[in-house]
Length: 402
Image (tube, rainbow, N blue to C red; front, side, top):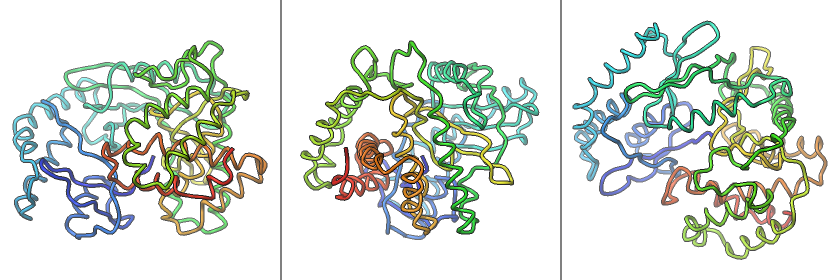
């Protein structure tokens, strides 16, 4: 999902969370630096520092050097200088390995289209891209994702879906050749729309979300969650609701100390969810994208949706309303549009699906807010965590869940 604010991690302590105005910087490292330089600590941050192995990516190397320089310049206590040393040692090796791969695939460094949180993306052929991953995923996970994409019945949705042609590993890089999907991210266009255009885009967004639910679970699917190293979602262990109880129990062991502190009557609220989920699940099993938000949708110049990106962390088979509920609160997650988008989109949802789904939508927003509370910060000290706290403290949701 889209995360608005970030923080810089140090060796001995974490600097105060920082916030930046939307549009100042789109790269998460730039957000960190802008926040430090402006001294703006008015909002909480989201993301935690990641360990750097023997061979950090070029991005980590360059950022490590600049962090060390900035720490010296600003006299920031406790900021690690390990990144600086590692970057100096391995930068040349990583750059050489990258250039070797690009040369092998006949790709110019100038063909890079983007550098995201997970991969560098290069134009490879008229209809494909080459992606380079360093330390952000595993070969096993990419092969699982490739098989998943191969299994999708693409005729059931009116837009393109990702497709991985090949997955290989070379040196410290994982390399995929993937279908190139046309369009511009919806999230980049939303701030420029008029009120009428925004309303029309919401309708298309909802139609796209509902289209995913047209894809049924395979008849012999073995687990509810695409990536499940803990084996919490084995179908043999129970239905969709029983899986959610196991998933919540697993997550609550990590986040209860924090949420009990910040959410009124948290234990009683968890028990209410457990009571609801004790009921057998009787609806169909449908595909759940798990991260359906404007940043994962591509649109054309006529604002028609052309593609849905990035299945992964929370991709599941279960109740399609999970996707509808989270897609609702993700549409304008941090109220950047200042257009009462959450209220407007909810009204569209209830008009399209019927008012009877309201309680289930609230239920899944509350469940998601527990499941994702520490996704970006293991110690629950970031902006996403407090977004989850706000949802879990919303008495209106709790009064109407079912």
